[in-house]
Amino acid sequence: MKRNIKLISLGLCLVMMSCGKKEEETKPIRKDVTETVFATGILEADNTYSLTAQTDGYLSEVNFNEGDIVEKGRILAVINNKENLFNTESAIALYDIAQQNTASDAPALAKAKNEIVIAKQNLEQDSLQWIRYKKLLASNSIAKVDYENARLKYLTSHTNFENAMENYRLQKQVANQSVISNKAQKEIHRVMLNNNNIQAVVSGKVYEKRKEKGDFVKAGDVIAVIGDAQDIYAKVNIDESNISKIKVGQTAVVQLNINKQKEYKATVKEIYPAFDDASQSFLCKLNFDDPLDFRITGTQLQADIVIGIQKNALLIPRNYLNFDGTIQVKGEKQNRKVEANFVSSDWVQIIKGIDDNTTLVTENVSGNKSNPSELSESIQ
Image (tube, rainbow, N blue to C red; front, top):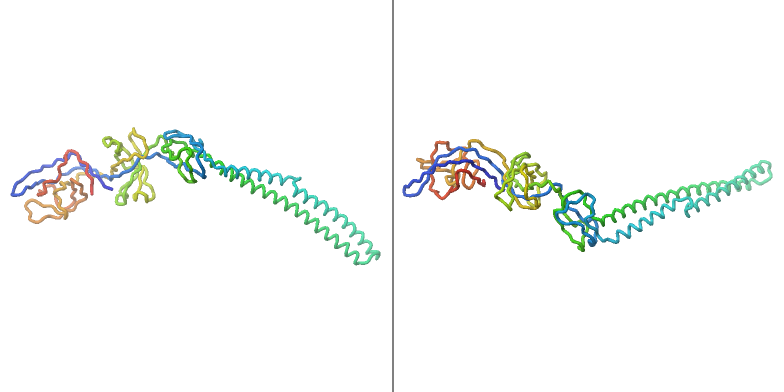
């Protein structure tokens, strides 16, 4: 990624001198410098999402085309998955049976009720027998062992009656649990059956159609890409060395690759919070301030994001700066070390080592052939 600087109305006085070798000499100038970060990216629709298949099967219907405006809930495609249909029908049938088993005349509950009736009758009969034997024992009319047998039989009948009551409660609980379980299974399979119908999750415009009728799809396969029909923005890549300079609210100039002669003003709207592994860069969202007359997503673009304006910067042509960071001052035998803030292909900002009155000399006369009236340079 490169940073750019833009120099407005530069006037340089270059004098050619001949002393055996061709030389140029000049003095630094002061101009305002606009510093930018260069970024590349694409057009993208806001709220873009991938509409995916939730089950496996062949597409029996595809009811949309690229460019269509679709409403939330509209069925865009249908997957032929009969397994989901059979499972749903089975789950509904089992749920109906489970509901029937909770009725009072259901076989299991009716049987449990009959057991209660029989146990109650035995309890009443054995209770009367025990009471009679108790009276007979009091008058010494029976042996005590007969009384104990009658009492034991009564206690057994009482226990059998309690067990019959508990068994009925258990059978009813099992029936109710079966209803709950089968109802859940019915709803689960109904949802799975609904997955055969691929519906628009959010209203928007179809920007990509990935599948056609007859295609076999698996769960997770993208059927279409849908996004906001109106809000198109620039998603740009910023490298690690420059991301710290980007702030929300900064202005930018965007050029679409289809027509680099036209510029669009934009503003940094969002800096994505995570590093993008695919592009090995950070991502930023630029909202267009100017009307966008080309709205096809995926269109490649480039942008200059303004990160600052340096007033009255001291500038020299690039060909006057040596590769070792020195310059040649007129009248000095030794090259002088200077400190540069940025170095572009044609211009250098010097912040230490020379002043406005320093006269520079160079034998590198092949450099700086650009128009001084208005330049846009990439800083290395």
